Length: 113
Length: 112
Image (cartoon, rainbow over all chains, first blue to last red; front, top):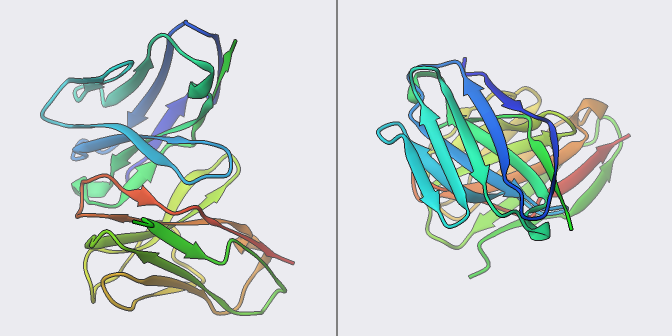
């Protein structure tokens, strides 16, 4: 089945710096790649997603890039703020492009003031 | 709009006991999901329901059963709880497949 690897597992940056989280997936049929943010004690919340027919998508300080040939996608957060501190999860649609999402193991981002 | 609600918030069970986790959504979504979250393991899909009346296994279905009671409600049942089922359980819903999933606040379950 689909396998999603996420790196790094922890990331610490200074306020105002950029943060990059990378994910790789195994199934070339996957076609939907969302990113979720989870704050302590809460459920995950979608922050951005990308579909396989586009290579990049931006929403204010957040961007996602997708390289289908290499089977990897990345989350970029610019001008980080303390409220960006959370756990971030990438996901990919499952085997054969199914609607069953497979999640990475998460990245704990800490933004130091 | 309450979004996705889950009950209970916390539960402690003894090995062998049974219980049902309840989930409801008020967004008229077609698809609903149950995940478990363990430290260092991310979110793993237990079961999902693409529409009312249908259910399908996810990555880790063993030891669980589900019921899509109607379009709003999707319950998860543990027939004979085991310590390995200690986890945080999240329910989610989405308008349809390949769309944003909206998550509930979670149920923290401990099996002794």
